[in-house]
Image (cartoon, rainbow, N blue to C red; front, side, top):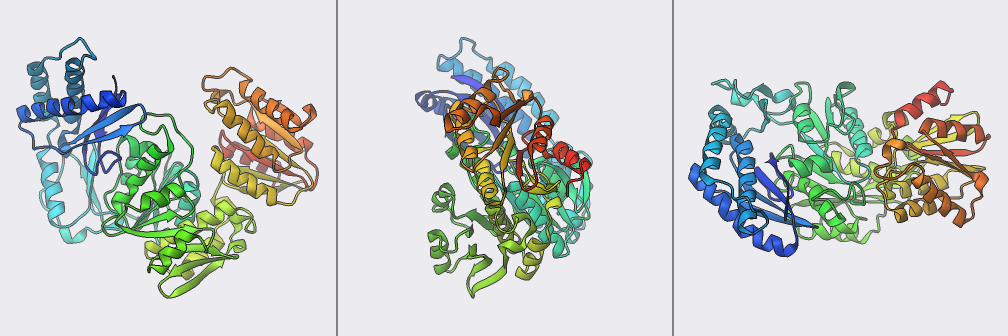
Length: 559
């Protein structure tokens, strides 16, 4: 057994639907069986000595270990994590995994001091009052707020006023977006639709926190901190919260309630970290968003993702499905039972449900679908349509939003440029499922010749890198330009990834003259553009970021 981490859980999470502290331990299943009761006894012994409220205990068995959590007061979470660290040390000694026995009385004295310093009576009073008045409260280390967006007020967590006009606080519509691929495009679609509906839209995402076009901060704000920050902006009257794996795993969900939550799909990406080493564990993390909508909102799911379909069978909340196939069995059964789904019927995006089928728009009317060829963006449009409809937006407004969103509003995702008679397709696709979708779309774009510019991170297995090369070659490539991407070596030697790609391409029938090796992505782009002739298509997978590539194309006069 080996200690991995002890940390705070500040919202609903993959271990339990509560707030507290979690202990991660690397161990075998048998070791986990022995650890659970010993750990629980040690935590309970310390809680009793501290005179804390009784706690809820929970565990999550994982590939290579276990997560052990217990609930704790909001103003005692740092102390709770110290308890978890002590309980681990005590349990490890009892189970023979450590020769050091921690001193109980010494730990108790230290924890009493920590708990006293952390305690915030005013915060706990405000939490109780907000619950009594039925108002949403958001809190963190520095600030606490009541209400959401334009109906909110925020104070320093140690400077809470005594009196409140509780009638002045209210919520705003919230949509949560998670999944493996399509999150960012679905968020941008949803934002554009809500803007079409007249809302001032707050967005937290992997790109930034923003209200409409006003960017508050550029960074990855897809965790709970980003959700709280955007919901405290006083000009926000609707919010879309991109919610990524990392924040859900480490801290939990940033909000306890939402009108709708979307899970786009579950596929291989960011696997390997403790707690997300396989697709089932990744699903468990993404599924956390369902906690926010189980009571009064709607959960929007991809009917073509078998893991989501299987997990939904145990879900007791309100479901809405989306699919590229109106004849999908899950969709048909759901609609027949009185449910709602958003699907593609021939070339039409439709809402299916009570009242029959309602037309939204055609797939080729949406600019970012490239005439309907970008099927993955048609799926993202359906997902965003379902999400925003669950937030109260009318179908005609949704159709207007989908058909007026331009490529420039979705940078780095399936952007098509024209330069000197050739076409250049830029996408951030960085995992197998995203690349497969891009290759399917690229093969449908008419071209005399096709070239692919790409690199690959070194933490992929040899077989996955070969599979990427095979999938790419299958679309009919005439040139392959490989970027070394030194900062993505991730343990491999310089040139290793290129060697694997080159060997696989040669095995598939490529010639040496068709394979070019460059150090940086911009060098790769320049080499491909020098190669290209009018009528050709250059596909660029901008793993290092699309912005420099797009800037260079702009300098060259691309449209």
